[in-house]
Length: 267
Image (cartoon, rainbow, N blue to C red; front, side):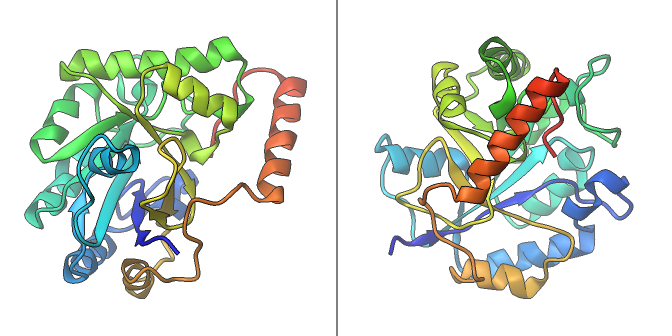
């Protein structure tokens, strides 16, 4: 059994979220309590880039008992109280931004919510967060035709690189939706890694373009986080093949996309 590595997936941290993201939102109090559990666990916090370097052999070995914190989309709390809570505990993290949702005047498939602006992405790095891409519009990538898929991956990367002034190497699939073709496209677009969801623990044997994450929901408790830090919690340890229901759900979504036309929101 490979050593379990918790990679936590957060979205918004706020008291009164829009209904569509409420299930994946924690309050600032919950967030602080959960971060305190991470610190108390004795695990070594690292960014996704460090994990990927170890998975691919480009870097040294992982530190003892690593843990990774990640944030998707780019909600308004991220470059403010959320980043401050992380920095106050000396916890690095990786943030994946949906560029169409955080750029004024642009649009995305995400429903309305308070979002940060793309111009604040460099501030995230000042707080110690690594910045990655989460596509332009947040579609179900595994239902897109090749040209649209390439555009989502390449444009998001280029937009972030323009504002940050350096290469952006890491990707998060919206809602974790991916396939073999999507993973190949991510590599071809210049990403060195991509995170999925899978609600599982990662490991030192995980796949660089399908890194497993544990999605934090509003109903998760401190005890849940403690279990994940201990490598338990009733979840699997990656890598493992997609289950038949996952494959069937992908086929259904693809058929629906063909029938109805146009990209669909991944959420």
